[in-house]
Length: 286
Ligand code: NDP
Image (cartoon, rainbow, N blue to C red):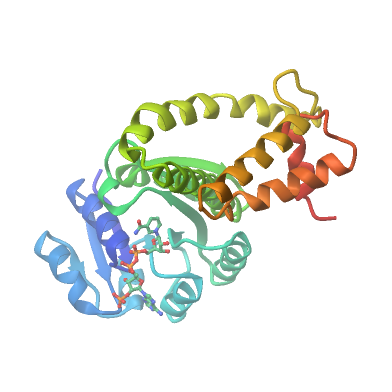
C-alpha cells in the first residue's frame, strides 16, 4: 500500500533512502538544507518541502538522515512532531539516541533509532541491513515500509541499542581492517604479491577464524575462559614473535601493540592458562 513518507536530509544516504521509497511507489516528501539536492528526487516524483516543518507536516512517518544528532535536533526543532513517528537513521552514540527519544516523546512523537549497516549503493538491495531500537509499536506499524530500504531488524526497546550494536559491528570491522593493514605491511615488506596473499591465504584464514567467534562469545557470556585450543601464554609468545618480526622487517607494529598490552596484563595476573576470551575481562573498566 502506498504511504506518505517524509525524508529529511538528502546527502548520499538520505537520497538513496528516499529514492528506494519512491521506487516502491510511496508518496515521498523531501527536504534538504541545500535545496538543490532535492532536484533528482523531485524529477522522480518526490514532493519538495520548503521547510522541515512542511516536510514533517506532510507525513506521519518522518525519516531523518543528516550528519549528526545536533543536526537532527536543529532540523526538527520547529517541526510539528505531535502524532508523528520519527525514524532517525543518522549515525550517533547510544546516549544521543536516548536523549533524542526523550526529546521527541516530550513533543508527542514516537521514536525509532536506526543503525544503517550498508553504504548508499546497497540500499534496497540484498545484504543491506538496518538495526532499529525504540518504540516497538512504531516499528510494527511501519515495518513494511522500512523493509523497502533494507532488511529491518528490531533489536530492543532501548533506543540506544541500535546505535550501540551498529558501533559494535563497526568495531569488529575496524579490528579486521587493522589486522589486514598490518598483515599487508608485513607481506609487502617481503615483496610478496599482496593480492595473491589476500585472496588465497588471508581471506580463507579470516573466514575460518570468524567461524570460531560464536564459541568465544559463549565463553565470554559464561565467564568460563578455560581452553583446550590456544592459551594466553602461547598467544603471548606468538605476539612477541609477531612484533619482533615486524621490527626486523622494518615495519611498525603499532596496530598490534594494544592487544599485546592487554594480553601481557592478563598473563601477569597469573591467568596465562586461560583462552583469548578472558581478555574481555581486562577491557572492562571498574
Ligand atoms: P552526506 O555528507 O552525504 O550528507 C550529510 C547530510 O546532512 C546532508 O543532507 C547535509 O545537508 C545534512 N546536514 C549536515 N549538517 C546539517 C545541519 N546542521 N542541518 C541540516 N542538515 C545538515 O552524508 P551521508 O548522507 O552519507 O550520511 C548521513 C548519515 O547517514 C550520517 O549519520 C552517516 O553516518 C549515516 N550513514 C552513512 C553511510 C554511508 O555510507 N554514506 C553508511 C551508514 C550510515 P547539506 O546537503 O545542506 O550539506
